Length: 530
Ligand code: GAP
Image (tube, rainbow, N blue to C red; front, top):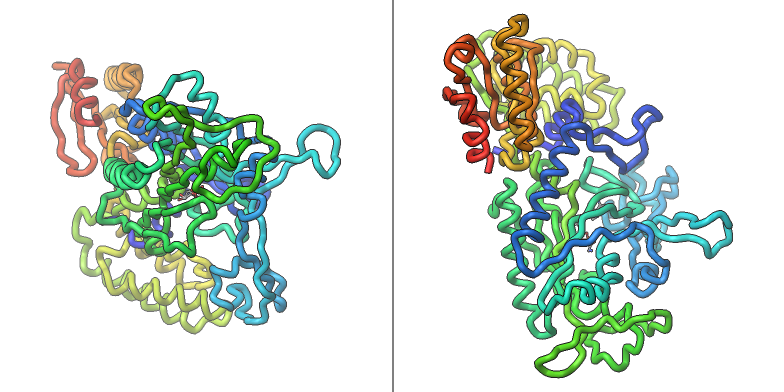
């Protein structure tokens, strides 16, 4: 079962150090997040798996790491200066600004319908280049990594002797001055993209588009986002980006948000290579491009079989790392009932929830929308007890919940029952889990147990498995702590270990335990983790 609300995932991500709001100590900056100690491991593992699958395991791919800053002309001829716009409206009542297509004609802040006509707002960030502040000495922070690939197409072709079809893969930062960043990592102003530009012979593009769709769905399934949680949206002609002949958007069923884009797979035709080329009239382009008198290159491919130069077509799978992280966490999240709570404690939680619903529903401190959201959430939890009991914590983290006095009593009733009877577990696919193995000594004040556990940690870490040591609580509590961050295996060193060298290995999902000889641990774990 995936998470039932986005709040559950946000709350876990903040509580356990996956994600922090950027520059928190000064009140943050909207639409920017930092990856904490566990977040950076998860992100690196996702990116590493994408790179391994798309670069190392294929024979037709090269990698690239292009700079974020590029000559401004790149963004002129790519079409971004002219067309990378969102429709902006102002609310005349409260002076807030919104993206017109996100608000259905009504200001989400004050409810007014007195809005200005939509006007285009270019989403590229500008930054000054060099010490002279004249109006022309600026560059854009790239809004997609793709253009770094197109600008290096001829370099890669010349230095690798690749034949069509072949691709160039890149992972890197992209920046968009979103009008309303929202929904945690989903819509932000600074994010990472994993992009492939796959160059093919014109005429084979539709076949390759279909092949890439399948390849990408298979990758998503392999990192824990199954096929049946993704819908394929064939973007209607009128909504296609200026460069696209056809685009499949992969739509993941995010908790709370519903189906939203997680990856776009576009057929960019010969638009980009053609746009960035000189002598365009000699290239037989199919795409409509602006005349380019600035380019120093013809971005073509010599088709030896037919003794002619062609401009390759491009298939582009493009996924955001943040949206991927959010999907992976949502999919893996579970609040699992470990043992049935005593009836009287459950009844006390139920009554506290009813008191909360009554109090929130009557509260005059909250606006209508906040009140309705709190009541609806509390009612859905009350209707799904005992399974939904751990969700009380994210209810109390919602906007306005701190204004409801009985919320404190509700937490006091619910938290001990949740701690005692439930576990939060992230069922992450082991290969992307931030920590692979945790090692505990049965007693923290016993030199033999502690020394052996630390030696095992060190030995496993040397095999490139992220391994941690912990002795800061009872074993049951340590298991729960690791379950919550998705660690697939925990090892306990006990007195038998000192006698025969075996340890207990406990598996996260089944909670099954097995004794394994220390000498065989690395091989045993590597096989299970894959
Ligand atoms: N090069 C093509 C391109 O950039 P896109 O559909 O605009 O296409 C590709 O973006 C992916 O980048 C999206 O599917 C999404 O995963 C991610 N993405 C785009 N804008 C984002 C934003 N503001 N915040 C987080 N991720 C974003």
